[in-house]
Length: 442
Image (cartoon, rainbow, N blue to C red; front, side, top):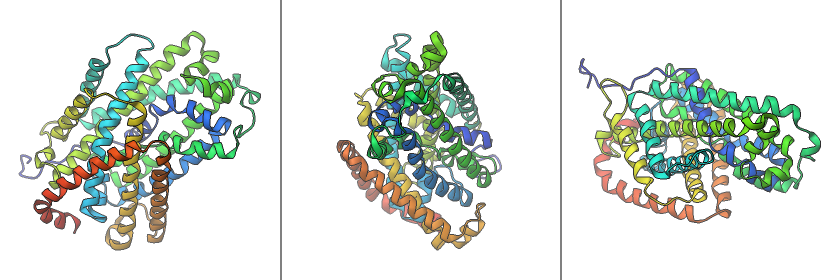
């Protein structure tokens, strides 16, 4: 409670730039440094077309999230929207699975960061990961505005580094090196799309801090649109430059494609510049993940789905400090476990698609059953438009979930098992949540 006797509120202060940098900063992460090689191996020069196709589902997801944010901005939105407009159990399971997703993502990102830094200096893996987690969660503890400023600064450095690579490398590239537009056929382009979807995951991250954004109903939709555009421009520019410099065959065979591609235009500066870009890219994705993770835990605590103590707000910093601390503890615990990067990546992507599917269903139900919220939304789209976008999003998410089965079935088993544990917990907690669900869904 505040001094005036009113419930404490989350501190605001994140503007349009922070929203754009949070969304684009989450999406433009480790994938740009790792996904080009396997995408080129599968799709050849057609990976450029595959990048464009991979952006299509993202556009629909982004539009749905933008509308929901313009109608009802909430911190922990990916939990709040399905809980209110689909079913409390759906919202709970989305958030419960995201605990697994976020812990896996934090572990994956920190592991890859240490591996990249290890190319320049030998570092102990687990102690380095612990230091990184401590710094990232400390930023989020003292204030979302501080964390957003750090995100903007890191994103600015990454954009400068990648722009330097494109500006110097593109003139030295050759269309003859790239070959035909789809060197491995159109089937290869199609098969590369599910892999390249990971480039755009997290573009909607700003909705998770909705109550901490200035004028969120207008700022978040604009920020999401700009983040999608910026991300697409960066990916197409970088992929095209790498293809023109190396060609699809060398790109597919390289273990560090961007570093190898940068050697021609940047010479001896290629390794330090691209290593620094990779490190900053991963750090800012870690920062954004910690930010959204803690807000999801806060939202679950606020409704009683998790212990209500997690809904506490720091009297000075205006942050959900206990939720931040829990996220930190979970991340620190995870570094003690053995990690398989491929397995972790798949375990992260499956719950993310389920989250998108649930939020699209929430948008459909809001437009269908809540004309009051639809009428008050800052984005004045018709109910039919919103429902059409929502069902397209549902179809895209469902198709991507099914498509991933061909890669590895084990992450699906892990997600199912964790979801089953959550279901048991929800059933046990359900009697105490019934009254709260009725009030908040009204």
